[in-house]
Length: 264
Length: 356
Image (cartoon, rainbow over all chains, first blue to last red):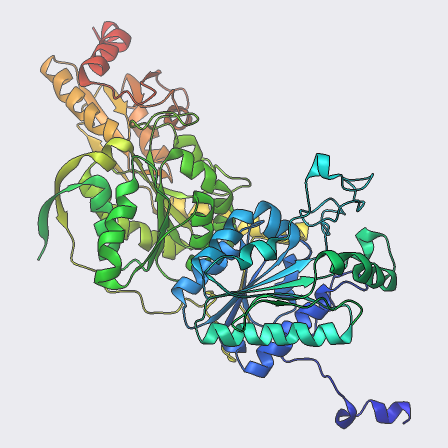
């Protein structure tokens, strides 16, 4: 097939989702946010819920998420996205509401809001991007930074004696009765991308059925602050992040089923 | 038909919220205002389907208010001083994103954990900003339980007229005291959809974004200019005050809230002694009645500012007076309420010698 024929509409496997705006993203090359945004847009398109979805953007790298998604959105203060989402959902119970948060936002400054939103079983979706580091502020330690992992504030590697242990927040919140579905995904391989999309799709469907809180963790990479090329960062993610944060459902209607999917 | 009843300030305010067609309340218990949350928990949802949610903290409550207010409905929270301090982050965001809402502060003595007794120690925090950045709240200061009722619908009107958070600043005594109140007829729930609200984007319009982030300095300056212009308009249009026996007064007491009531008693006592005292009471603390106080300064010999703090509103009084007449201060702190006698004594000490 020559180049001209590849680019005709019938041959395209993927097109730009209608919900994804035609705006160049500010994310660094190789960063997982772009894929995660696209998946959200695809799912919103496929469910036909663009007119009924309200998103909440975090403080952190995804602070501009509203520049890329063609839906009504609110920008929250650092860590408070799930409280903002609670306020929206309580007044618009028939709309689809999600928050999109990074590890610092959700698991450090916003731990209280996260735990209690989950514990109340707010009928929303929380998308949690975990790349084990603070991206926007320039590579400081996150609650999810791995033991021994270097950051600008753990220059000799995270030492548990000084900085404590990495926080598996999804494992924690999966214990709460208000949480209906908690899963851990990644966007580093085509297979993982597809599985993440399914998790997002399921979450919005559960929200429609008013089942309670859905929590989708996406283990992701940060090539810039990990000081790696995109390819190296994906390899490092597979070899280090995923073994510590194994992919799979931590809570689902079918029961817990963590299946490590390394290298998939 | 208007309903006459005996109610505690906090409960009367909560009842007024229900009758104002308030859609949602988010709060966290703190003395001396927990009755607002308690009363709404007992009555609101059953009667009107209003959302009433006890948040896990004041920080969560104010951010729930941000989200809920972003849907363009009538939303409120209430707290007391330390709780309002926790809310300041959220209030700054709400002010910048221009989300209308009602925030009630039933003030207690501080700083720190302080005391649960009444105080006016949060004047600076309420009228000068409180959180980060250049912003203003519209601040209404009731002095009776009746005004705790009447100011609620007024606050919602102002909040939506200017897309600005409005604060009712009452001291702890007003929250706790019982008085006769006339309740207004319930106002129907607001049904129109605000054009700026995040309610889900119909195909017919662009997406609505509520944010306080404007990373380009030029854009952020434009937002600030817009906000400052709005505050100027509020200053021009919304000043409210009450004057009591000011027409022939030689001495003016400036006071707000509960203290203004005490000052009226003082004025009556002073007049019995032949000292012509009047009371000027700002009802809106922002916008502050600078012009009205400045005009008074041309007619009187002196002003005694009375507050339940170390002297906060006095700074605005002095700004208004521009040094034309002496401004003295009498304040009690830590939850102590001044008496008419001690205020009268202060008048005599500071001014009477000069009047003779």
